[in-house]
Amino acid sequence: MAFPGCREDRMEDKTASVETATEDSCGVCGFSADGMSVRDGKVRRGEFFSNLLMRLGMSAGDAYLLSESCDSVFDVRSLRIGNRYEAYFSGPSDSLSGDDGRLEYLVYWKDKVSGVAFRCTRPFGAWDVSKSVVTEHRYADVSITSSLWNDMLAADVSPLLILTLSDIYAWTVDFFGLQKGDRFRVFYDERVCDGEVIAVDTVRYAVFSHAGEDFPAVMFDQGDGGNIYWNEKGESMRKAFLKAPLHYSRISSGFSYARRHPITRRVQPHTGVDYAAPAGTPVMTIGDGVVTSRKYEGAGGNVVRIRHNSVYSTAYLHLSRYASGLKVGQRVRQGDVIGYVGSTGRSTGPHLDFRVWKNGSPVNPLKMESPPAEPLKPESKTAFDAVCTSYGARLDSLSALPLAGEFLDLL
Image 1 (cartoon, rainbow, N blue to C red):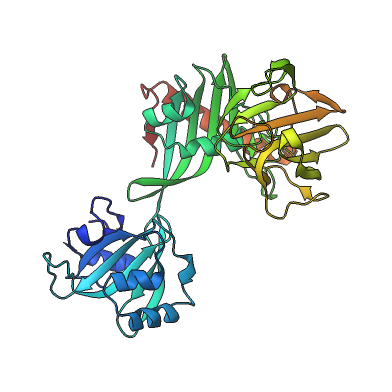
Image 2 (image 1 turned 45 degrees about the vertical axis):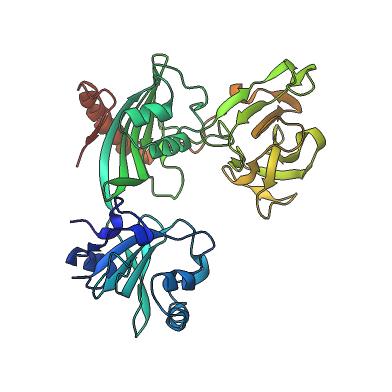
C-alpha cells in the first residue's frame, strides 16, 4: 500500500473523509502512524505556519513553541500556498462535529518528493522526510502529426522529455519549425515517484529524423567535465550559438524587410524574429559574450544587447524585466537567463523580439549556421564508436516493432 501522502483521491480540509493510516507510512515519515487517522489538505492563501497548526487543533502557545523548535530544520517563512500536507490524529474522531481528535504529527511536502515531518506533541520536533524515487530506463518513438507536445502526450510519453531534447538539440534542431512526419526515437532515464514522472534525468541516445535525414545524439562522457553529447561523427552537439533564446514556444513574426507593423500599419523592415511566449518566460543568451546595453529603448521596450565576438552581436527586446544582477560589462555564458518575456515598448502582447547582427548587418536568426566545437578526443574514438554501434543496433531492432509511438520499459 502506498504512503497516504501520495494519494490524490481524498477531499481536503474539514470536508475530507477520515482514513486510518497504516504502518506503510512509518518508513517514509519516521514515526508509527498505526491506528491514527490522516487528513490531507493544502496550505491556504495568506496562511502562516502557526495558523495552519491552530486550524488543525493546536493551541496558540503550542503552535508557537513548535515553530520555534523546528527553525534549524525548517524555515516557517518558506511555507507555500497550495503545497500539500498530511495531518495525523489520535483519539476518537467525530465526523458530525468535524473533530478528528488530537493532532500528533504533521507532514508538509515542499515538492513531490521531499518534505518535513513535525511532532505536534511534547517534546516538539521536526525532521526531513522523502518519498521513494525509482529510475526507469525507457525507449520512446514519437512521430509528429500535430505538435511535439500533443504527440508526446498521445504516445503516453512524459512531455518533460521535450525540455531535455530541446537542450541537447538546441544547436541542431529548430523546435519552432518541426514538421509533420518528423520523428524522435530516444533511449532515456526518467525518475518516477508513485507512478508519476517527476523528471527526465538522462537521454542516452536519440535520433531525430527530418526530410529523410537522421540526426543522432549520443551521450558519451570523456571524463573531462566538458561536453557529453555528440553526433555520430564525434562532433560536439554544442555549437557557438543556441538555435533559439527561449524554451518551447512559437514564432509569431519572422525576419522581413517589408513587414506591415501590427500597430503603426506601416510597411517597414523587421530584422528579427518574434517568439510568442507567456509573460515571464525566461530568455537566455544564445552564446557567450559581454552585455553592452541594458536599458529601456522606446519602441523596443526593455532591451538587452550582447556582443559575442568581433563578428556577432544579439539583442533581446520587449522584456518585462531583466535578470537579477545583470549589468553592462558583465560576461554571460551560453544559456544564462538575461531577462524575461514581456510586452514593454510598442507591442501588441507578450513576446520576445530577437535580433542578430553579423559584422554589423542584420541576419535572419533562423538561418544562422554555427560550426561544431569541442571535438571528441582521438583516444576516446574507439569507446565512442562502441557506444554508437550498441545503441544503433538496439534502435534498429526496436524500430522494427509495432510500437507506434509508445514507450518500452527496458529494465
